[in-house]
Length: 108
Image: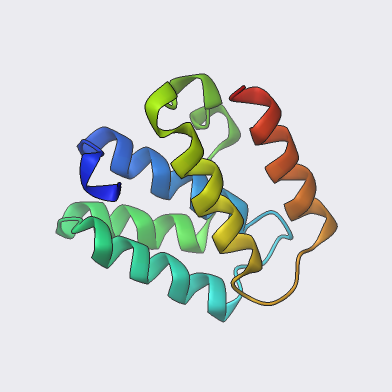
């Protein structure tokens, strides 16, 4: 399913996933590795990879994250990927769970 995403949607997915990594105010090693694996799977180019590195150092700005921009056909993929990131470190923080629930509501 990842291969069905165009460039903008690939970056949008990674931006959302990075924002979820920051939900508890810290990007854990397991979350960082999850994102790096996702970047490889999405075959991002050098400039896209650099942008992801920046999001791992400082979260994407909230005003850049509009769930309404997630194409309907990819909403389940976005939710599933965000959920996989959240559980990747073995601990689901309250803020992470709340963020996922909110995203789920917003993309319905």
